[in-house]
Length: 83
Image (tube, rainbow, N blue to C red; front, top):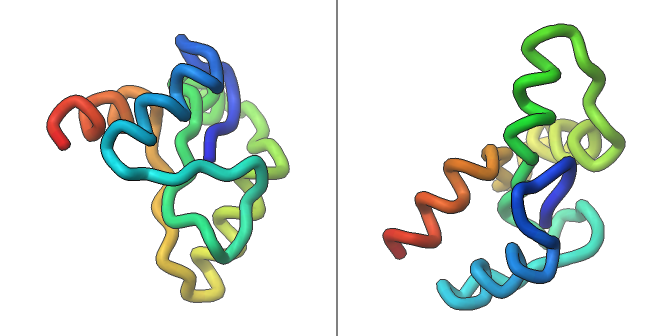
């Protein structure tokens, strides 16, 4: 699951995820385990930006105890490169 402005297309990101066995989704739900947020969006949050609906929904699911991690694009790219 991807949200925000990425340095690659959603298709490229999904293909990178698939290469390491990660199935992607179009929506945030209890079925996902990772939300990748574009690094630009994470930087904007540090300076008072607003979280989008997918980000807020993921945080809600985490608060409810679901096994879900929110990571930035850089962390995602490092993960797929080493997996």
